[in-house]
Image (cartoon, rainbow, N blue to C red; front, side):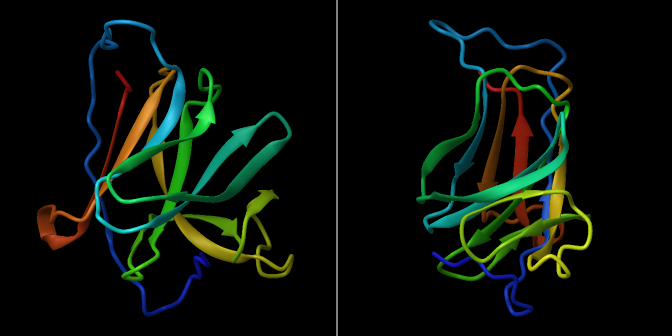
Length: 159
């Protein structure tokens, strides 16, 4: 799958962030990771951005089939803020946000978020997720209308 940043593919992002006062307890073994669930029927390409010890990093593409989930980061989360960008491979829409980071046409791991084009990458707008320093987080991508008729994404502590 090639997830380009073409001007013809647009879905605005409506962030509906679920907030929990206390971490939820799950029966059985607790998971610690950052997962993305694709609640659409289409293949989606996902990129993630985060602050590492050496600085900003963006990486992708995870290919997530419709009605499935994938773990993007395994183990307890080490940052409070994570950034997500996704594209619908079949319909050309996207889930994006106001934070500019670097992406590439094919699989990538990019250090730094400045001078994307000069370094041979593309710029994309990522949506910020404040995990509240939870050990786990899950984002769900949907194509159901939110307020304003835009595509929706929601993030919440993972159970």
